Amino acid sequence: MRQSSLVVVANRLPLDDSAARDGACEWRRSPGGLSGALHAILQQTPATWVGWDGEVGLAPRLPDLGAVRLRPVALTAAEQAGYYEGFANSTLWPLYHDAVQQPVFQREWWETYRSVNQRFAEAAAEVAGKHAAVWVQDYHLQLVPQMLRELRPDLLIGFFMHVPFPPPELFMQLPRRVELIRGMLGADLVGFQREQAAHNLAQLAQKLLGAEASDDAIIVDGRTVRTGAFPVSIDVAEMRALATRPDVVKQVEQLRHDLGEAKRVLVSVDRLDYTKGIEHRLTAYRELLRDGHVKVRDTVLVQVAVPSRERVESYRELRDRIEGEVGRINGEYGRVGEPAIHYLNQPFTRAQLAALYQTADVMVVTPLRDGMNLVAKEFVAAREDGAGALVLSEFAGAAAELSQAFLVNPHDVDDLKQTLLRALEASPEDRAARMEAMRRHLAEHDILAWARAYLTELDHTGRLARRFIGR
Ligand code: ADP
Ligand code: F6P
Image 1: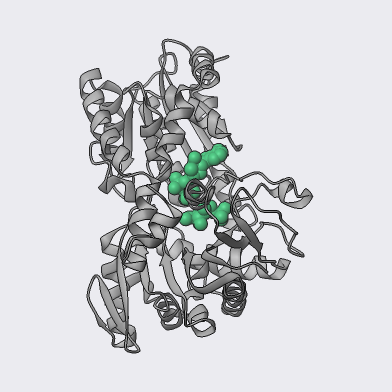
Image 2: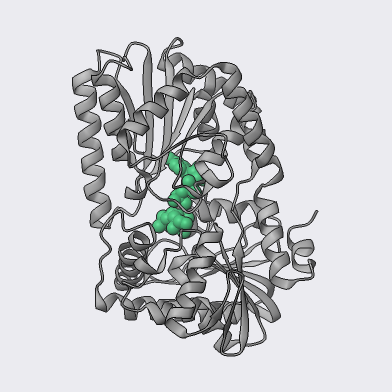
């Protein structure tokens, strides 16, 4: 097996499911922030990406993807259930998102989570060259840093948490809390989206391990683990280029025509996940229709909700509830040929998303809790025309950077209704000033800047960043 001096370890490979099997690979832009973000920086990098291809059974043989080598990790059906659907997405995911959905603690999931983490660590150890840098991603693989350090003490190990990292009051509920903290602290640098998360980890390390800890360093077993905030971003250049492509411009015209030229268009784009606040949003929209603040003849909502984690019961139930509610709203308020809500439960291409973002008068991004939310950033990047308003949840990591958005508390349906109306009725000058400020921020803080900042902090020399990120 060839070895690399940079190895990325993430739950998923960035592959299209069908492409992975027949060998004709294309980068998969799976509907999820992580693979999209890493895809943007790794296409031209001689790194190795260790991950799962999303199917159960034997690991497929995969050719390189551009310059990146792929090292698949196989999962059995039982492992998919215990590790991915179980401990990662039914225990950690809800708990880390403020327990907006009740976390499930099932003892048998832990052993599967641990053994799958061990397999990922072994795969990374196999493909990492001497003194290589290994960058482990997200809550699925929280034990990997420590396991990898035991296997390969020569490596420089980074860990980045894409999702929120909760305060002690929540984290302390976890039955395996000590192992999880120790696992992350196997890294040399633990990165988060927000500073608050680094503070939470410091408090937990003190409480659970008796470690000496501040918000930027934790001493554990005589080793210093650095911590910090590195807000992830998007490929701004890609989105801007897409937005001005002639076929995308045509799509925008067509969408505008299809939705009704004179109508005000609200757009939401989410993975179908209970953290995204889709139900709260629908409640607010229904009440705006009921109260007559919004009328079907002059306003329309487009809700894209791409299927996600459909084997997990809470996701299936959520889908049923959302589809029931959309049906009720359309049944009650829609007219022939004029639904109140266009609901699309399907994946979109990047070009289709770029067109949709440009169709929005108001983009509505209202998660109950979100590590970052890249959709908000994609919308801003796509608005080459400088128009369009962004309604953004205070509980998305993106709110700390996009403070000129119309910020809202999505748990408060009245606030949600008022903020939607404020955004709909804002003057073109107000919207343009807000958009310009957000675009200026994003131009400086794209995905390359994120990777450069993280890797520079990881190796202290900037060598890794220069070699792999360039510029
Ligand atoms: P999360 O990481 O929780 O999924 P983000 O908002 O950070 O949330 O990232 C979602 C990513 O998925 C974005 O890059 C977005 O463009 C993409 N996405 C969302 N909906 C769709 C869809 N219907 N089809 C394809 N990609 C989608
Ligand atoms: O960061 C959130 C995350 O879990 C990412 O790891 C992933 O890109 C995204 O959500 C989509 O989730 P999944 O890989 O479970 O489809």
